[in-house]
Length: 402
Image: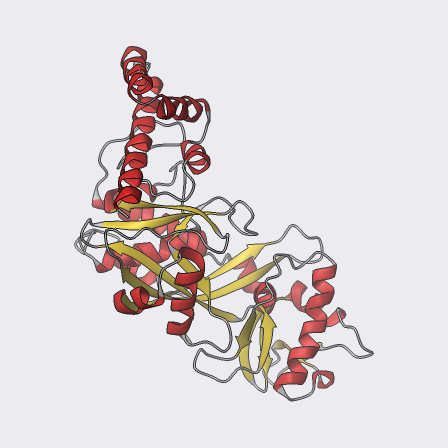
């Protein structure tokens, strides 16, 4: 273990050296860069060649992931623009503006989408939101003689999407009928990123599911879906574990991410899912998770996601994320297990705050920003006296929390 820790610390120092060298070369301090580079070659030839490869790439993080698989890395606490220039220390007021920008990336429902939206209801319960165009497509897509979906007009003259009588009235029959429609849309290339993971469709988190639906198809019904996001904290160091997403992920490949996060499937409690995801994504032993985990609240957002497919205009994401803080020992290093993560590394609070900038060169996955912003506010990183603070608080939970 001591050997692995020494190796990890050495890799952190190498990454810091690479970043320093890149900054020197951007500033045209070639003499200083060459001196450090030469010393590294003389002291450790292998590391010297690693530096040489890294400096020739456009992405330091990609180079590190290839050179040091499954190791931790601590990035320098610098705010850098996309052109690689450092900026001065930011104020709380600027950080609040940056936070709102990051939240709006997810919490975004344009007026055009609102006016084109209709309720999706089953048994007089509103369980989703869809656009007119998506509703029409769902009504046309069916495998039997009768459509599974239909649009009706209510007594108040509102148009509502619902299930037809052909879907019948049991959970199983409705699940199978809707699955047939979604399978058709998948075959047509309209639904992508199929996961073979079922979500429960209901009017609220604590209600019994009316039917089960494939995770990738959830947004086509505009249903509320849920997830668990875990902040991996090393409290003795004041740092947070971060992850680099796999390049094979269907959404946001290669982006930075929280240490562990996952959708909430049907049939599992929140804590069962937390323990499962921590082991599957980061190799965290169950007893370590159960000992260090703490539920800290939830955030919610609604987003209209435009589509390039000619048959639909876009889908509506309605999301509630349950947040957890997991305090981890300083000598524990998470490791990728299920292939969803390339590698893990640690960031300081300053690193995280710097990454909020609109022009930050290597951003975090959008909805993870929201969970991390909640963490920063809970830990007093931003003063509530700062103008805009309450706007951030409001935006973190502006979606439905049913």
